[in-house]
Image (cartoon, rainbow, N blue to C red; front, side):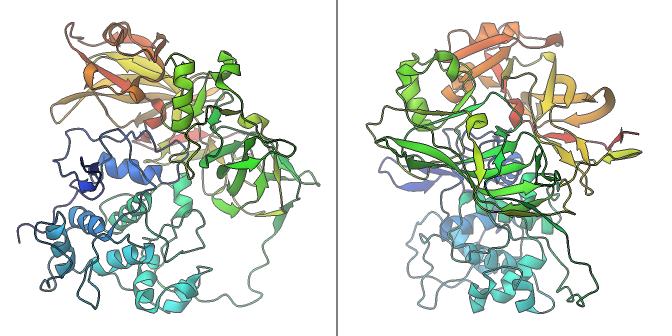
Length: 607
């Protein structure tokens, strides 16, 4: 066999293209000069966003030609074989055996052979490989543990007892899953305490597992603990932790928030964003607690900035024939801990799009179905519509003849707890803290940002320009003690600067000043690069929404799309050799920057 492995190459299994016959076939292509990391269906609050974006940044995974990633699609055994063949470097440990259900010329034959001889995958006792079978989560993690030759230590059953359904893990898989757990490969969404062995692994799940496996191999850095996605990574251990002698630790104090408590919420980082769905859709959504929530004793149980994960689901409205929508919460993140959470909103009823005031549709985040209905009503000019699709893929198919929409302002949800919530009093962030002295934001911290101001504009400029802009944070950065280091709304000033990567022109945001309240600090933070693209290659998703464009970019973009809304002149052009005949433009969504601190920042805490 030719070269079995090549590290950090494009996964042919995660890139699929529909053939003319409708079947899914692999799209095998060389790695692009500048990887696509901005996927229209990987929303801001999507749980696996950091895993997907960082692997895409390194060309380990790719999306689809239409700009989507399709994170909720299942992965087959053949596709998974191609993934491990592309992502890891390993030596053969056994000879290949043929499988009677692999036809000659099958697209994944070489990948399956490589995955078999290196120990990542095996066949079934009846001599089959089952290449089109959707791979369960337990098989995927067993494969990674075996292929990377991970060994568990201590009592296997004790290690797996950390999962509430650990007894359901099959006997053949228990040593490997124990090893994967101890080495930090396991990512459990939506509840870190449930393994769900037989759940079919999605593209998002596989991205998370592969990312953690590469962390274990020293090829990637762990996610920062301040990131929401890190809450689903099962902490690795060196073995079984000895049980604590009863009485040696005082019982942990718990704070209780009573049932029927109303929670003030909003879209994360913004007061103005509204959701738009159509009746019958179920889509995931994330909300942010807008103000501290206290218990009957006046103690803060849920601090402002905590994140609520849940779903917008169909509901039959009482005394009405209309099918409305209700938000149902699943989890809440308080400090660095995630709790199962039961809360529901009041229902929202559908309306005709013609009956909606145009100003109501400014700053909306629609599902794909809602956007389809809104387009003709507004003549295709969806001013200020946010980039991407609300919450990823719908879990239910709305009626095909549906011409109604439901507009939801998160601030009007009247979200109410349906059961008592207990939160550990010692959890970081459960009590407001006033730190003193100096605090440090670590190098490598990722800052999630948006454009400054109430809107969520994207930026447009042409290659060669240097432009001064200011962005603001949308997720707070906490330290291990629960102190808020960088609160929501902190400002980062810097420049959109030209960057050359592998002979392709692009732009990167470089921040040099961070302002928190009335104090400013010198920082060194950089975003990922955004590639310059020919105007003819821009998609409708690129051009939807409100863009702040430079004069040169505005001239290039005019006439490209009826959905284009130029929201003003971007920042201040402060330099650059701008070509006069270039037909390229760079579109930048600040929410996709992934701004990374390249050096630690020392902050002065309140005295």
